[in-house]
Image 1: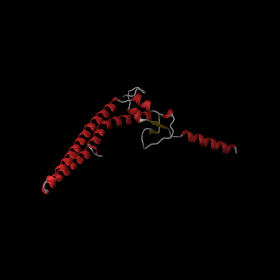
Image 2: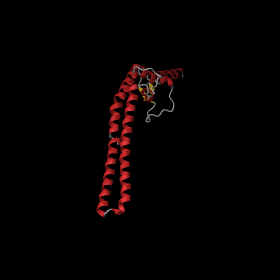
Image 3: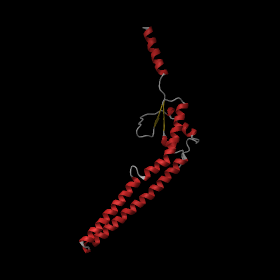
Image 4: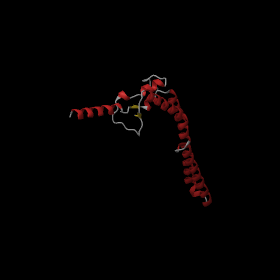
Length: 176
């Protein structure tokens, strides 16, 4: 019986020695500490607002064309009505194409976001990898990611501040 207990005790102790080490980071928190991230977001917001204004202007113009057509419809010949209807349809198609080209999944806004935020995200990922190697961690989860859901996370395993320090910034000084 003593041998059996000793073997069980040693087995559990050895398993603990080979346990994997986990940690997590909060990338939203980390990114809020980076001035280049804030300036990139501002640049994206300005571009997005400018493009949205242009899209809105296009649709206002289409609406004006349609209202003018409705007001003049009774006075127009069949040929003139058909031409105006085609003009409105063509203008609406151009406006939707423009909107899709800017805001679509492969649109200019998406490409600009990748161009501006990609290097910042790569820098943070590289730094997280350095922290993981330095602390001999096996896994680091992203607390702010929608795909990774954590119901409980002990703050003992949060290495976000280590990443911020290694990036050269002071934790707790979030940019506004």
